[in-house]
Image (cartoon, rainbow, N blue to C red):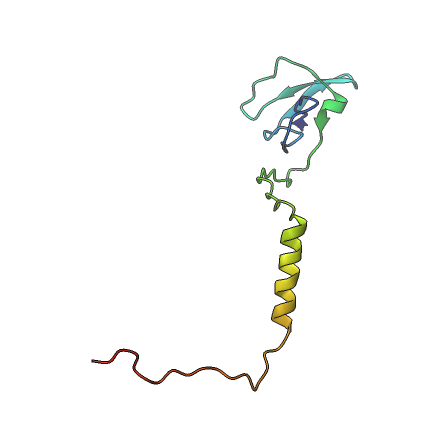
Length: 108
């Protein structure tokens, strides 16, 4: 079992809803349950059924940081990006003259 983590109403960011540690149920009356941690110590508080999450032994808990999203582009940035993409798609003319400099510029 995992225990529900209490959160404030307006907290920012993502935090997991349930605890990382795994507990076992010792006894319960159908509505509230007493739990034991991996060391065999019984928790002082009893938890209600909706505060617990049943997990399988194979479930692995990962707390990976959320991927930061890119900030939204402004209209100007979006237009510039679109123009650059259009310029990349336009092929360069094959008969374009290029200046070739073969002479020396500085006389001794």
